[in-house]
Amino acid sequence: MIIRNRYIPFKGFNAINLFGVILVKPHVQPSDRLLNHERIHTRQMLEMLIVGFYLWYFVEWLLRLPRKGNAYRRISFEREAYAHEHDSQYLQCRKPFAWFHYL
Image 1 (cartoon, rainbow, N blue to C red):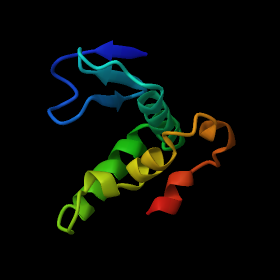
Image 2 (cartoon, rainbow, N blue to C red):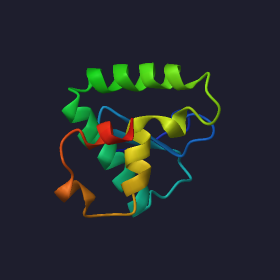
Image 3 (tube, rainbow, N blue to C red):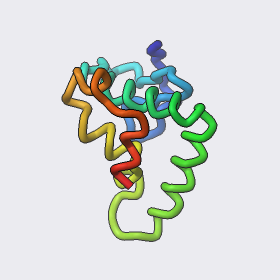
Image 4 (tube, rainbow, N blue to C red):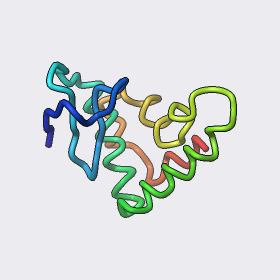
């Protein structure tokens, strides 16, 4: 499900996936690439029973904050999603917990 919203996602982001619902800014036309990226996150959420996904995401982000570079881009969930967002067939062949390889 896609919901257009001018408050969430926050400045600097065009879309965010919250509990499997994709929130996009009103001016954004979601591309296949963006939707695939968010679908990968939905699969990750389901694997981690949703709450586990958000806990792991937050802890990993906190651990990466003091290091050099973009903490958001270095989160394993994001690394997997960015690496495969162009591959529309990825979710059909993706192994469970594939994000673990991006730690």
